[in-house]
Image 1 (tube, rainbow, N blue to C red):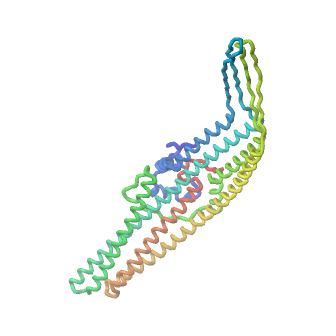
Image 2 (cartoon, rainbow, N blue to C red; image 1 turned 180 degrees about the horizontal axis):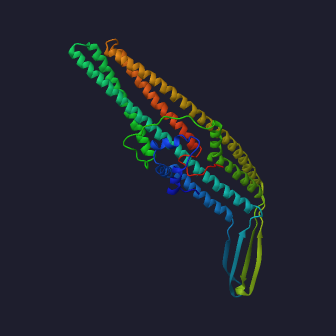
Image 3 (cartoon, rainbow, N blue to C red; image 1 turned 60 degrees about the vertical axis):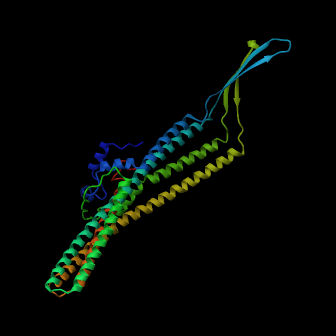
Length: 420
């Protein structure tokens, strides 16, 4: 069973990763330390439950290897009374044990081994799902922090404009309706700050509650610019599919169910019991020792159980195929989404640059008296919306690229690269 260790975590932090190698240097500044991440993942309740499940599967495998039969000792003592004769103390005992037919023990060992492998793969997948959850919550917190910072910056800008208009009103260079528009813009900006702060607090609470082992820094790190993927998309897809623990667990479970069906078929011929029986009668005058063999006869119940187990095996094979198709679909969607998210960020960045240039021209026109306050407020609101869209698109693009690495078990993983 896998165990996370500090040396392993440090090795993972230092090793080069591909795909997404362009992120390897950049993501260190805005992701939590990998040693803390691995520790937090190992402490997640779902991972703890899967760890207990793996321990249980190991114990069940040992039990299957030992077999279902145990020695049974029967003892009896009786007092014999004879008419017109002496009384005798008599004893009887029997020690028996069931014996598996040849082939059943091998099947039991295989069933136990496969069950243990399924549990180990389910543990690895629980760690993987926890890593995905941590990535989603961490990036949502970064988005919320970025949105709050931009809302606060916009609010400060609007306040400066309002104060400047107040001075112009006092000097008689601006009308009161301009001040009213500026105050309305200030109130709207304050509302945006309040909404952004609430979003940030929700993200912080969710992250702190789910992964308390990861302390949040006082200030959110700045997000770098995303870069396009440097490898063929199909290579990413194949890597994700090839390392999927979900596929591995489904395939092992299908194998286990197949062995269980063979075991149920073999169990239509019940196991015999063999043992020794001894008697001590008439106070020891008569003694006997014999061999006891018991052979049950299988009937409709065992045959129906074998048929049911075979149906379960067929269902397991179908579920494994369904899991392969699901993971392939999700892998393709993840990789395609990363490319689309990068292109969306690039378009959002270009749009923000254009809006900023337009806002700067509107601000100069307002200073020269060629534009009204309503035009300036509208331009600033559009810039704020474009800046927020660019910030969210940047975080989305980074998260989409990181998700490829997480799904390929190259980020926040314990080092096993093969889900099968």
